Image 1 (cartoon, helix red, strand yellow):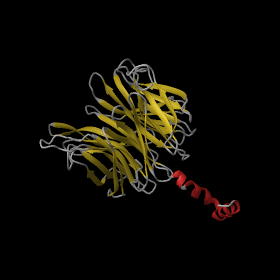
Image 2 (image 1 turned 180 degrees about the horizontal axis):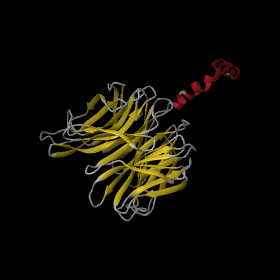
Image 3 (image 1 turned 45 degrees about the horizontal axis):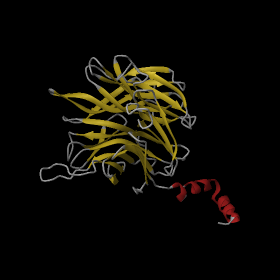
Image 4 (image 1 turned 30 degrees about the vertical axis):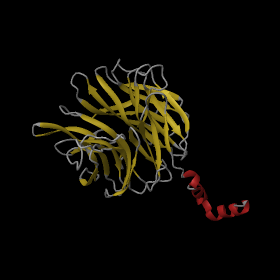
Length: 411
């Protein structure tokens, strides 16, 4: 295009010319990326950058330490083509594992997980929170926990006032009972309040926290429930006010067991949760279960999908159009005459898109020799999806795949 023609087009297009450039093919690049070091590297969460200039994944790695027991937080930035921009590790001489991250107002990131190195002692994990800048340089770190429990940070978000909310799980050593805990801290990592959400004698496990339209919080996880003499686990949904005080809670499931791994809010004010179900599985040992409830927790619809083996949803995002994108895994099962699995593929990563009524629009399996799992999914500015997890063959490596909004994959 000649310069004067381009200028005329920009003037006629008005303030929207930049969006046309942004949605050009240059920014629609699909990719399938595997990267890591000599040992174990895996992603647990992913965020699509607000600038549109790529994604950041967080997980763990023991590829770069002096020994295989030195597992660290591993945070990696990739550009919109999937090329690694920077790859950083944080931790001590024992084990650190990152479970979640969020992009912060200053363009950096807050990463949460657990640490043995800085906790109460060997195998005594405490919640570890690390703040890094946009280049991955560590700014500060905080440790939270008790000497008589195993504590892990599982989910994090930043509020409009700059403070942070962290969902953690605390397991007491002497009883084995697990409680979900919600922590609020300021931008410097100083504790503002802490709310214990469990009630004796049951155990609860928190998976993800989000804000709701009222300014409070919603937590999805799993809770022990009793059916006659049997104790099992069901989906658990908790509503809290802006101070972290519980407003109501609800469980969903059957007699055999369910686990909720993720939650998102839908445009109508309701919530969608996903994980797996044994109770309602159509095939195999457990299937993906997606559950939609209204703002008060009343069930609206549910969807069960699976293969002849194990299937699980590990993360979801509600799209700008109100659809539901899900990431997880399916198990590839090829039986012989004795019903033994002969497949060499193991798990395949799964990506699927549902409409607002839970109907499947498309579904993609991403696999190969060994295991592949998708633990996180994010929607980018184009409306495409990027998943993050791991692929396992001779070694375990990060797996990051960009999938178009129509389900197209470059593999």
